[in-house]
Length: 189
Image (cartoon, rainbow, N blue to C red; front, side, top):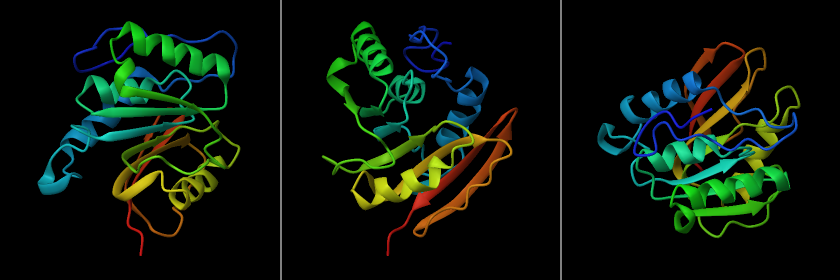
């Protein structure tokens, strides 16, 4: 598994031992970031990645957060409950020279503490088949992690159906092999 684009292109991700971590496939990340950068979801049709404040919830290896940093995001918060995964993320941040732009938090995305700041680009890649995506979206929004008009990408199993919670507008949905990506915009009332 490697970072597929930007200034860190080709750098290897650190995958901790064990079978609990399922990094997003390189091809899926490439397709997802093409959408985020070129589909016109940003202000005035611009990229939503450049200068974004990123939250990578259920981060695992941090693949999505590091991909965003590599492509011009300003900062990334990596959130997971798995200590080995977070240790690997912290180590990779240092190896990439990104330690000052990466915040590593051991928290459950489905019941997080209050946010230090809102995020403009949010990635959720919960374990497939456990119904965690909707609960995590609602909890993260309630606790201030998701900023107004933020773009949210949720990866679920291809056969899972995700009904966006209230205040989330579905923008796009694509299937990539065993995965489904749902893109939304957070528009609180």
